[in-house]
Length: 165
Image (cartoon, rainbow, N blue to C red; front, top):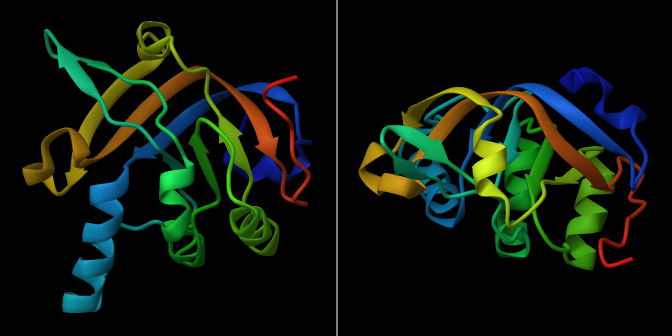
């Protein structure tokens, strides 16, 4: 699946993604906003990118990663989508306000299977820190994945898929 095709997918539709993802969570979101407020620039381009809400750990230089709860990032959603982010990935439901923002920017919310970080980690071809290395696991990483399993939880039209069915 290529990033450009994301709005063709409907809520509840599973697919495999190959490409790059930007990994970030709470601390990185806050720091990006602070950085832009202080410098007038972003520390990395977000336009056309997909954000994966996750906090990696490392074992023998291998990244182990699984999704984190997305609702905590809802307060940053409009900011990141306004910077050109085309989709977000995490786990769990989003707030009603987040659903409206997703619909406004036509940027779907995707879920990755939780509880299987070891499996997801096998899908990572490479990774690097791209901003805020001092944050450790909360730094911003860019990962390259192949056949990364995802489900459309909220499509570009704001239709939702109940993950608890």
